[in-house]
Amino acid sequence: MSQISGLPGWAQRLHRALRGSERSVEDLYGCLDLSYGGGWLADALHGRSEPTVSEYALLAGCAGVPLSVLTGMVPIERSLSVALRAGVLDTSEDVSVVIQRAQAILEDFRLLVSWFPQAKVERDRTLAKARRGCSGDGYAKRAGQMTAEHVRDLLDLADDPIMDLVELVESCGVPVFHEALPQSVHGITVRDDVGGTSQALILVNTLDSPGRQRFTLAHEFDHVLHNDGDALIVDRAESPDVQDQTERRADNFARHFLAPDGGVRKFWRKVESEYRNDSAALAHLMIHFGMSREASVCILEDVLRLPKDRFSASLEDPVHRFMGRFGLGEEWLAANENSREPAASPWLLSMALDGYAAGVVRADVAATVLGRDDVATLEAELVRQGWTA
Image (tube, rainbow, N blue to C red; front, side, top):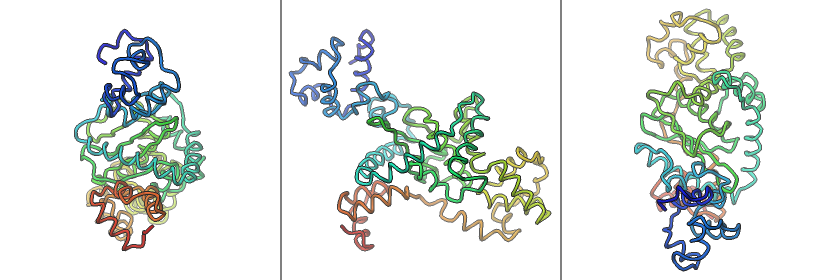
């Protein structure tokens, strides 16, 4: 398959797609009951005649490559499993294990929604509704803010803080996993386009602070809303490309989605008049919007034009001690409890457990969702907890 540059475009695409097959070319001939190097597959691989629809369908079944990818309806780079096998995704070594896990999750996800399709349909409607708010403005910073404001309106969020961001994102059909990722990575968005539908999932790094985790999740949510990139987007911590307009838009979306300007102004007026102390007001703002201290100071500078040096004394103490000064220590700890612990997608885990109890999926599906290798031990635990078919 190396000399393909002179072939018709459809034949070049076919060669690239078949690089993502689990079978060798010789095996494909045998699977299709064709003599090696002969028949319609040989004609296709040599660019002499394009396969018919039925031949494409047969080839898709044998190759383990979606029909939509073989026919060019979906680019290879947008199908995670095919792109990984074909080697057309830039996957660094430090995230290779994470991507393999994401691929396994997506495969089991398709199985689960085949048994519980209605929940997926309803969530897809919510996602389509939210996507109507995506701005196409050419200025990335403005596009991020406009998208955040429009999506908030469409989802009836007003200017209120988002109490459960995971639940909101999953209500749009996007599973969210919190896992210990490499320290250089804030979050990852993985997508697989199969059969004309696109399914994404988001992974957030539990090694980051709770405020950073919320920001990352909102950032990745913007990538999903705008259908950005190929099958894999890895957002790294160090040396972000400030010229990447997609990343700038997603950052500004996260900022305005989590803390809308109107809500910030309204709440700041309230706490400023009530406490008459900048540090106390800042502490309550952090709790209210679930933002880090540094991000909250930047937001106040941006929205209310308050100079950063006005809060310099507020940045000296560790956060837990800072919050404790204003009687918010316990509330801060409760809000961030278990933030360092891995957490599977609540939606996928619920479907996996319901499917196991109904006898339609095995315990290894729940193990994949939970990220556990000890399937037998997990199954014993499920039985003890009453999750029996």
